[in-house]
Image 1 (cartoon, rainbow, N blue to C red):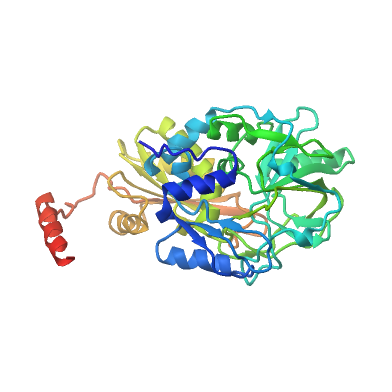
Image 2: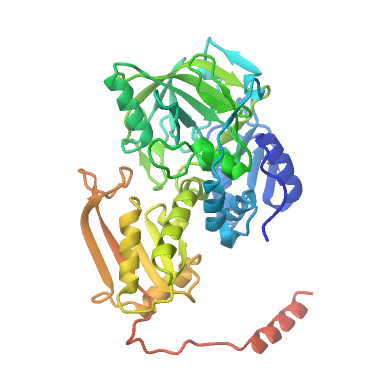
Length: 459
């Protein structure tokens, strides 16, 4: 059974208090002074090198004027706990909860209305510099909310942003996303696009913002499904955009259809510093914030947090599709080592060529993937070492590799062609019909004796 502790209230402060009490070994509060220039990133990287990924609550960040919460999504176990599930059931739990879509409930007031400011000075907004190669301090957890002018349906998506002027942000909109489509619809009407940027929503709201939905569907409904209750929203003062009533900060304004501003480089999910950007300008007209608002920051670069937050909803969808079409699939895993570009799939192959068919399905469905490795069901695909062992002992390059060229690639892939295409590869590391080998095995009784010996040694 999953963890039944209530982490689902819509206030991130309730989440911090309840999670810290329930799992003190997975919660690290830092009271010592830290710098706003790379120190928090360095802490997360150092902890990761030790095999640790605790939720971080930093109470004394020099010059920031706000406490910082980071690395919330650095652990898959923690994400599963948010959903009340065991880590091994994360995909199923996410899919089940996200399907129970619940419409938001509009409320008259909420903590986000504690302070509403029209004379915006973004120099006072708490922000961090994450990498030495970053152009400036960056907002990494900013969720831009835009609404369709006719249906009112909302779109939520993550967009990095840096300060351009006292009341303007430079940001990138992802030229294949739904926000880009809404932006161009507004541009065709000769109007700027009204938006609200949410910083510091509840973790389940933040996961919902990564959901993979059709254009016109609303991630705020997914947030309600994940929370098990309607997302409580208030309307922003000028444009009436519905935003979480319990968020820490909300920036309301417009994205200018004509302005182009410099933005980047920033440390992206590839592990490289990227200046690829749509170079858009967000003019902030209203700042809403809670009293004593905290900065919720997502670790940038190829951190486990950055990758998990964007990947868990996509993984869940891929796993469900594959298992529905191919019952022989037992597990799918996107390793952190592969950023968003690699996936491992385990299966009980029932006929020759089935692994290839499954890999083609993954490579076709997921626009990020470049490489898929297929292995047998007895290989632990959460272990890079085991997958590499299967590749070393089950795979013949002349026979077990497939390559497809000329497919659309990810714009942030530093190895992709200048025209935005990539090749994709499948590696069949399953034991084929002609495989000859007997797996070396140790009896359980021998393991039990070893445990008894080691127990004595450790005394």
